[in-house]
Image (cartoon, rainbow over all chains, first blue to last red):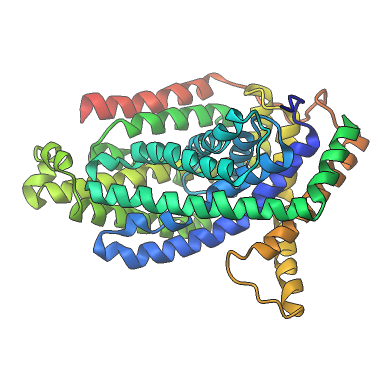
Length: 195
Length: 236
C-alpha cells in the first residue's frame, strides 16, 4: 500500500476532476429533473434522479484508480461537494455528509485489497457498497419509512443498477483506457521521481 | 444577518440543525425552518434574487414529487402515526404524510440554500484552513478548481467539438470527451502544482485573510440546532 501523504498535485487532480464531473452532474440533474416532472403525477417522482445516481460516485472511483493512495475517494467526494456548495448547490451543507458517506462507500472495497487491486470485481463491489451506504443515508434524510415498501425497493434497485453501470463499469473502462494510453504509467513514474 | 457569521460556525450550526431536523417528522417544524431560512435569505446582502429563483424551481419540483409519493404511496406506519395530526382530520392521513415528506425535503433544501448563497468561497476556505484545520494544499486546490471552472467548461465543449469536426458523433454521457478531459486534467494538475510550488507555495504560507470566531458565531452554531430541537421536540 502506498502510504505517502497526498501531495499538492494529488489535491489539484482531485479538484480538477471534480469540476469536470460537475459538468456531467449538471447534465444528470437536467435529465433527472425532466424525468421527475414526467413521473410526479403518478407519485413516482422520487425515482426521477435514481437512474443517474451512479454518476455521482464516478469522480471518487476514477481518482482512487489514478492516485492509488488511501482516503483519495473520500477526499475527492468532499472536495467535489465543497465545489458544488460554493457554486450554489441546493442541498448545501447536507451534500458534505452525503459526499463523505459516498466516499466511504466507494473506498471500502479498495481498503480490503490494501489499495493493490483495481479489477472490475473491486469496482463492482465499490459500486454496491456506495449504493448501500448512500441508500441508508438518503433513507434517513427523505424518511423512506413513510413510503410504501415497493417504492423504497424500486429506489434501491434502480440506484444499484445505475451504480453498477456508471461506477463499476464505465469508470473502470475510462481508467483502463487511460492506463492503455500510457497516462497512468507516466503519472506513477513522475510521482515516484518527485517523491 | 447571516453574512457576517464565521463560515465554519455556520457550517457546524446548519449541519447540526439539519441532523436534528432529520429526527423530527412534523410538517409544522419543517415549515418553521423554511420561514426561518427565508428570513436568512431576505436579510442577506449576498443573495442574488435571480439565482435564488433559478434554484427554487427544481426544489419546488422535488418537493411536489415527494408530496405525490407520500400521498399516493404511504406506508402503513406513516398512516398510523399521521392519524393524530390536525391536518389529517381535513385531508386524511395520506395527505398529512405527503405534506410531511414534501416539507421535509423543502426545509433541508432551504437550509442548504441559506448556506450556499450566503457564504463567500474565499472566506469559507480561509475559515476551514484556520478553524477546521483543513490542509492548506486542499484549500488552495479547491480555490484553483473554482477559479478554473469556466475554463474547464470551455475545454469540455472544445473536446466535444474536436470529435465532431472529425465526424465522430458525441452523445450525452459519452465517454470520449470525458477521456480527453481526464488526460488534460492530469497534465494541468502537474503543471499547476509545479507553478504553485515554484512561486513558493507551502503549508507554512501566511494568509492575508484572517477569520476569527466571535461570540455571535458560537451563538449561531449552538442556537440554530437548539431552536430546531425546541420546536421539534417541545413546542410542536
